[in-house]
Image (cartoon, rainbow, N blue to C red; front, side, top):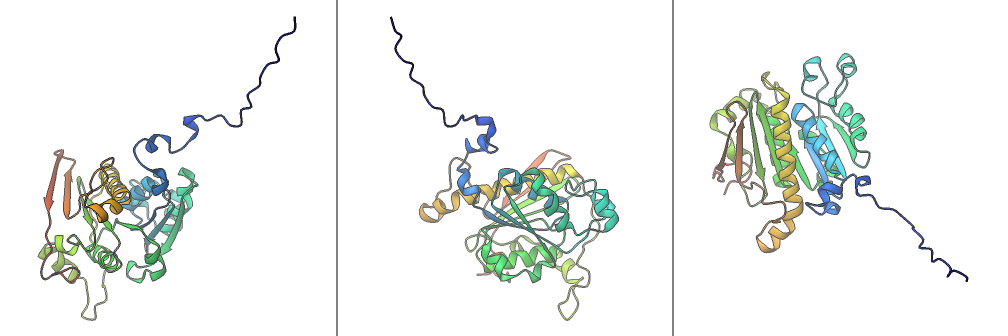
Length: 280
């Protein structure tokens, strides 16, 4: 008695979920939107390293990194993309970041922009969906703030000192800007370093205490806020509601975190009538 011929099912591809770099985060969000995101990171120091690292890991399309500074030995304890060879050669920070970021994820294009933030080209600004601020001085933060507000680019500003860190989300034209959150003393300190002609005398601020843990935490919060904006802004503009799956960003608010006491504070910001950027 002859056996019936076997039917053979052709297997064209075997899918293994662990072969997909983004499989776990796809359970939380639409990766296609994240993978099309073009981001500007202002500052390539301690906080900028952490921000770029997170953006590269989640697989955004393109990251512009802007900074005019070079690597020194004191950067090495908190900047994961820098090496001793960079410090000995005084390599540009943006070049060191762009060189090593693809080791984490070659899918992401990291473009170094060596120079002052106030000289950033219109071409870059027109290509950017979201900006993240990682500067350690007031002047640079305000320049980035003005550029983003003028070009209607959402901005997630971050800063840190010792065990303290802060994050502010700016959504032009709806929310207060970075300048609105500045104290009079902050602005006085900045103008003390600016000459009568308007040129910055010292672009670097005073040397502040930094530890890598603060940068890791603040960088994580910044990028998560950027994700919330990327995935929810369209819905917010059309219906007034943010994406429930990732939550609403802290638009018009400032978050302060103290790792020493494990305390977090969130407070509302309001547009200042005398603000040079968004004053009403």
